[in-house]
Length: 296
Image 1 (cartoon, rainbow, N blue to C red):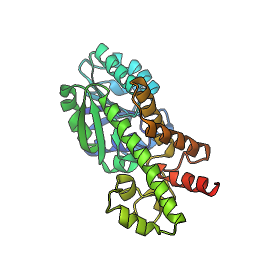
Image 2 (image 1 turned 180 degrees about the vertical axis):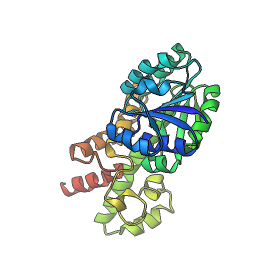
Image 3 (image 1 turned 45 degrees about the vertical axis):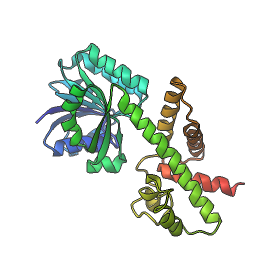
Image 4 (image 1 turned 90 degrees about the vertical axis):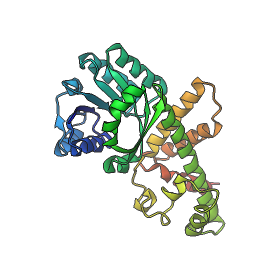
């Protein structure tokens, strides 16, 4: 049994911490939101008074926070109070520069560090089937892998510090753009008289096949488990997709990479936010495509 501190017990962090408890780990947790603390307490997480208290006697500390500024603030607060050799794992999706700065905070305090953002959404967090994209030293990765395996199904070491975040934003740039393309194809098919099922049956077995179609189809019917069949209740919100696309754009600008399609995808999700779709699943982008087509 390991002593694990967990900071950030929200929609993703809460189920992840709960899975650590189910696996027999002793988890001390904290979140600034009372409801999140209460829910995790029911799952067996021992709630402590503040973030700093999570590092007391901790072998591993996991953070799952909204943005880079939050990660850096929390790590600067807690790192000086952690035992030498403690392993910090940040599972947030943040900008690459902040991720690499977090590693530096750890090094300055004698702490091993990993950036380990996730893919799989709330469903994957609850089912412990997340994919972790991990940046950091090989030694730190081997130390952290058993804990990550209690929360996920696929753990990939992507290389040096910050490379987990690089892999995450590149993956989600593809995902965001492909969901737009799939949505546009369905709307075009609708207007030309092709049924959703016929479209799905053809494309799912043809060269246009992709995850956005076969696992997360943006129209009701063909994929029963997709959010489209549950009123677009979010597994991964349009707001979070916009956040990740903006992170990809900022990273591309920093290294002068031409990511024109990714940048355009970000602008489309910005329009979705303007039209009130932020809280819906990102596959609800099909509504924006349909609405804009109606307005032409």
